[in-house]
Image (cartoon, rainbow, N blue to C red; front, side, top):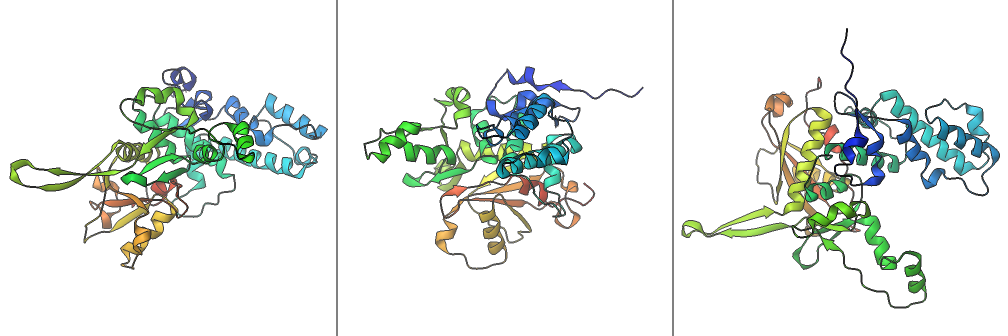
Amino acid sequence: MSPQPLVVDCATMASMQDFWLSSGFGLLQRNDRGWLQPTDDYLRLFLSRPELALVPESCKAERTLRSRLMDSPSRRVEADELQAVQDVDARESYTLFLRFRDGLLATGTLEAYYLSLFPRDGSGRVNIPPLFIDLLVQAITHNLLEDSTDAYEVRASEMLFRSQRISTEGGQVLSGDREVMDLLQQTSGLGDFGRFLAEAKAPLPTVNLQVLNDDNAPNYWQQASRQTFLLDLTHEVTQDLSHGLVFTMTRARSGLKALAGVLQKWVQHFLGVAVTIKPLQKVADDAWRWHVGLDVEATALLNDLYQGDDVEPARMQRLISLFRLDFVDPQEMRPDVAGKPVYLGLMVSADGVVRLKPQNLLVNLPLPKTL
């Protein structure tokens, strides 16, 4: 008799440290590999989003379709049911949801579906909204960090599924949630009332965001879903005066170290490969063989540097950090680069935004084809 797969209800575990209430982690189940299996309640989370909400003008067919899906989110939807929805935008929203749902159910887990969107051979075609991908990543990342007690690590992991706005004033590199930062800039954190004051040209109160540090880290857990903490991504330069000699060293602050740790767990979880990742301020390697950009801007920059092309100083200044990735077991790499480091880059765009693409680490590492 074959053993039954181990299924763990994440709802009981989530209560231990329930950050990111919107991730849906508590509505999922783990299989024996530790990957997340969708449930009807998880699918209802998507059906409850504003994009699929009923409005007074919703036709009878839309109301019927929504009611049937809420009762049974996994039920088959016939083409004529969908075509009967009169509003074009509503029909398109349901089409996208059903495409996402069917792909998720067919692959069986959130991780398998995510990998199907970004195959290593480059044949993938993303045909669902970026929002759905971000929500997948949020739930998967919550799974990775479910037992974490490190506020820096959890805050850094938000970068995998939420765009960040970067400030470099005063010698610090601070990362804040883009959506929150933009909203605060427009309304000073007062929502519709803030917009009213702004339109009336009335003075808005100052809102002070907190930079995550050891003193306020315990407060992060209660405010994690609000994305109001800034993360320090600064490289510090220190001097060692021991033995009468001066050594200039760089030491990454907690934000960069925490992000590196999250990326290590990300690779291990998906690929089953153990790696170490450390922040770097510069690369001095004549035998540089492999690199991966963690975002579109960094990919282009590293390609240019690798090829020896000239790079404008202003563009180089937008490089937040480099990282060195090493395989714990070099035999798990492609034979032609086994034992060589992989350099990673993270870069801010010209408009001050970082859009980290965690799929790049799964698609572009030098792995053998058989893995």
